[in-house]
Image 1 (cartoon, one colour):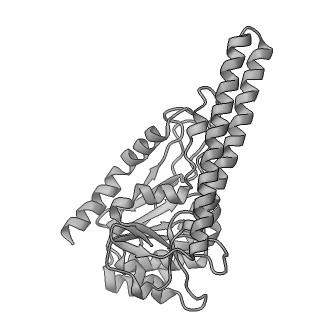
Image 2 (cartoon, one colour; image 1 turned 120 degrees about the horizontal axis):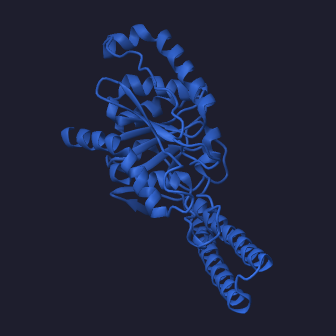
Image 3 (cartoon, rainbow, N blue to C red; image 1 turned 60 degrees about the vertical axis):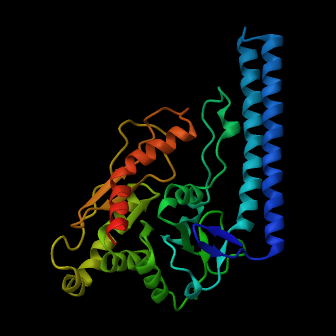
Length: 326
């Protein structure tokens, strides 16, 4: 059994749990061994040769880079093990009334959600040995855990769920009513912006069913896909404007999504999650861009987490206030 703040679900089988835990442990041991070996060899080379010439600097850097890549193998082993430990909700009807966060995304976004934090571009100091092996989906769950466990709909037919949100599986031809029910019950709905018809339907339903502070749009992609989502959602709202106006009133309908902001400086690095869009009480929208140019490439995991939380403060505060008044 897996319990999180009173929410209970079951992972698939006992065999899955054994395999998953074994792989997680193997990955951790692998990373510790590689880190010890890499740092030991690096220090030995420093003591023996110093940094007196370009070839010694190249040798030291090469050793660290190879060990960082080997350490990444351990991260991937542990991540694969956590896939076996992902809890599966067998029946939405049997879910408790404990708060949860509903995570809705196009299935094509699973590749981004399953990605891990990048290794640093500069191998000194060797912080890559302690780089988090958590997936983006796992990090999102930790970021929002004060609002409940993260739940999502698993991709039909997948043999092994990704590490991160608790999964539930719905039939292909009868999923919309269940998603509506989950939206209404969720403390917060996080929707990944994308141009797919299912995502556009989920977005228009979320606007129709939810108060503004209980919806966040997660932006994984660049301006082109975001702009396609913005245009398609505006078209969908125009087609449903009569029904939506009668339910929500004409004020601010349809919500005008903001432009895609650019980083303050040019650069090749960027976060997998580019930012989020949150809404005020009148459905005014605000794009919070996570700026990768602040803090430099060597920013620690803790510093990055603090920066993201700081950027999200207005949105998270509104969600907290909604929970206090509901």
